[in-house]
Length: 126
Image: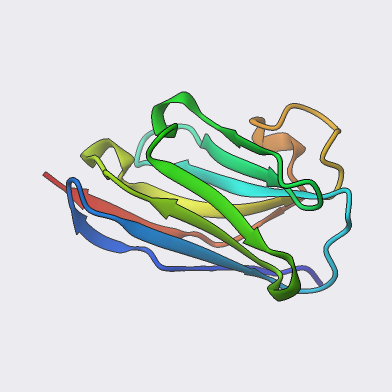
């Protein structure tokens, strides 16, 4: 059974930094991609970033480019999201996600992901 367990969320002031981690259980296929979505209260789930598990190709939503960095450690089955220059509008629950086929469907569509973590809360105060 695949499990994705996030950690690293918390409360931070605007301009601060946080690093989220996601530990994945089981074998991750070489064709997979992993990433992060977020959901703020009353809003739709929003794609944040993703990375192909083998090639390390990265994708970001425009609002986090230059501030967030997605990375991975394959031998530890761990995904990271380094978040710098945080803004109050980054406040949300951040979910780790995995899709088994990197090339199947748009990278930013929630429905194309096969597994979701429970999420970790990130709160940025102004």
